[in-house]
Image (cartoon, rainbow, N blue to C red; front, top):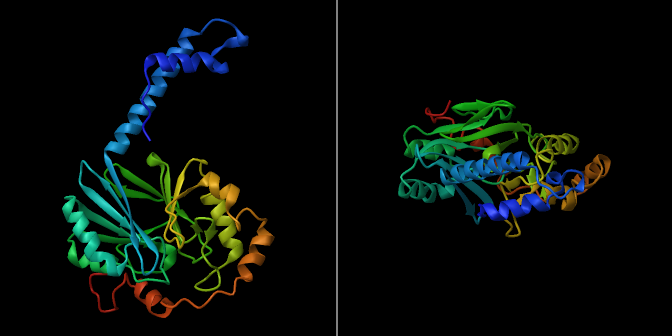
Length: 288
């Protein structure tokens, strides 16, 4: 969101702000006001420049209810995809080519159990593309991430935060410049990833989501890997207030997760082995 306001409006706002009226007095501290206006203008300018220089697209796979995210630096034309889906690779490649982008990274938030990643196929089609996943996932990839690593393309910089509990290798990628985080299956909109398979651990999930995601500023937008109700995004504030599981105590959360009795994932026996080798079979020499 970009705000436009005149100097007169800024002055009016500053005048009505108690912080600019010392002791409730009737005069304005010109120095503090000017400093505030300059700082505010710089923030708006930087925010506008950041948003004008980058591209962000949320893409959807109807079969697996998976969100894929395309992020790009519009100056360097470098791009990355988060959680690409095998069946949607042609769509993704077409969009990347239409936008005259160069895909540098195909990134996964974890080794998914409900679909096969498109990372391996993207590497085969787009020269120079490298696969990325958390080192803790034990999956094969060109680049393995550890907690605290910062990576990206051009001016798009993502911080990798470990959010295990759904799987051991779950990573949340935080885009601080645009106040966004890509949470994979660790945190869903008004929910969270299941913990009854693939190294699931409800205690660990509760701790990691609260310490690594819900500790972010409340206005950060959160983008999950899936949604099953047509929702597209949420915020830290919303999940702290309305998430029916993660607003509970840790003990209550563990009881909820252990009582879900969910069906066995249909794709898990095929998807997990494939995703541990970048979505390709073991003969794929291009995957390390």
